[in-house]
Image 1 (cartoon, rainbow, N blue to C red):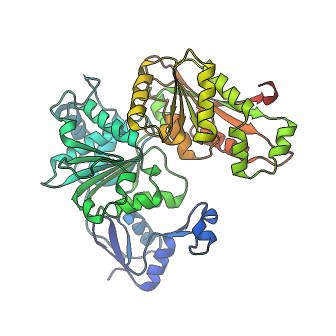
Image 2 (cartoon, rainbow, N blue to C red):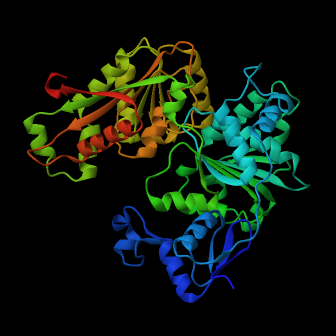
Image 3 (spheres, helix red, strand yellow):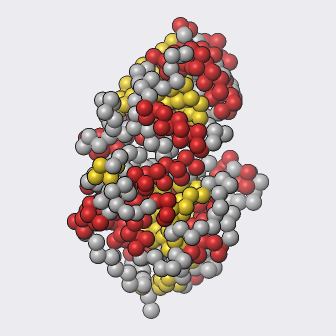
Length: 498
C-alpha cells in the first residue's frame, strides 16, 4: 500500500488518502498566512486565525490543480504515492501553427496574420496539459491565444455543452467579443452566432456555445447553472476577488479544460497556489523584456518624478495615517496643477490614472480639461457605462492629442489602445499587479509610436528619519522597475516652484 493514494473526485478536487499523521503533515504543508490578515475584520474579531488551509484533513480533498505539489510533498519526505494515470495529449507546435494559419485563417483588420512563436507555444502547452495558468504579460496577445483554444474546444462539444470565458470587467467582455470578430473576418465562423455576452442586466441563459462574462455577473448563480460548461478560460484571473473566483471555479465540476491567463502574479504564495489549484500549474509564456527585444512591444522609458515638499508640509504630514496621507496628497492643489501641466505638455495620447473618483479623478479631469481647451479630454470610471468606454477607446485610436483621465479599476487592466504613448501615475500605489498591468496599456505597437513613456509621480514628505507612507511605496515601485529591467531615471522636483 502506498503512503498516499490519490483519486479523482471531479474536475475541481482530488482526494488524497493517507494515515492521519501524514494528513496532518500535508495540511501543514498547504497552510499559509494571508498577507495583511492582521488588518482584516475576521482576524481582528478573532473568528479567523489569518490562515488558508488548502488541504482538508477530514474530507481529504484538495484542488486538482495542486497535484504536482502533492507529488513534491511526497518526494521530499520519501513517501510512496499512487496517482491516477494521466498522459499529456499529443500536440506539437507545428500542428498548432498549421491549425491557426490554415484551419482558422486568422486575421487582424481583415489582413491574414501569423501568430507569434510564444502564442503557438502557449496554445500547444494548454492543449497538451488541459489545465494550466499561462503567465504572459500585457501586449503578448492573450486574446488570440484564447481564440485559438476556444475554437479547438468548440469542435469537441456535445449537445448542451458550452465554453465559459470569465473576464474581470464589462469593458473586457465587449473587447474580447470584438477581438473574436476581428480574428474571424477571413473564415466562416460568425461571432454573433456563437458568442453570448453577459454583463450587468444581460440574460445569463443562452443556446450559444461560448459565453463571455464578468465574474461579478456569475458568482451568485446556482451550482446547476455551471454544469453545462466543459471548458473554462479565466482572462486576467489574478484580478478576480478570491471568494468570487473560488465560488465560480468550484462549481465548474464538469469543466475538464481549464486555462487561466495573467500578466502578473502576486508575490504572495497563497495567491499563486489558489489560482494554480483552480486552473493548473503555471507556465511562463514570455516576458515584457523579451517582447521588447523582439520588437513586438514598444520600448519603454520611465521618468520617476519625485516631488520634494517644504518643511511646513513635511511637519503636517509626519504623523498622518496612511489613508489621511493619501487624502492630503490627492487633494493638494500644487500637485494637481503639476499633473495638469504635465498631461497638457505631452505629445500624442496620454492616460492619467487615479484611484479615487470623487476626491481626485473628477477634480483632476476638470483641471486638465479647462487647462487644455485644444485637446479632447475624457473621464472614465466605474460609473461610466460600457458603451461610452468603448466609444472613448475607439476615438483615442484615431486621435493624436487626447487625454484620458481614468480610474485604475477601469483602464489599468485589459483595455487595448495601441495609439497610447504616455501614462501618468497620478495616484500612489505599491501593487505590483496594478503597476505592471497599467504599464502594459501603452506597450502595444503603433505606427506613430517609437517609445512609450511613463511618468511615475512620487511624494517625498520624509521628516528627519521617518519616511512617509507613499515615499515607501515609491521606493517599492523603483524595485519593481529594476527587477523588470525597465529603463528609468529619478528626477527631483521642488513643489515650492509649482
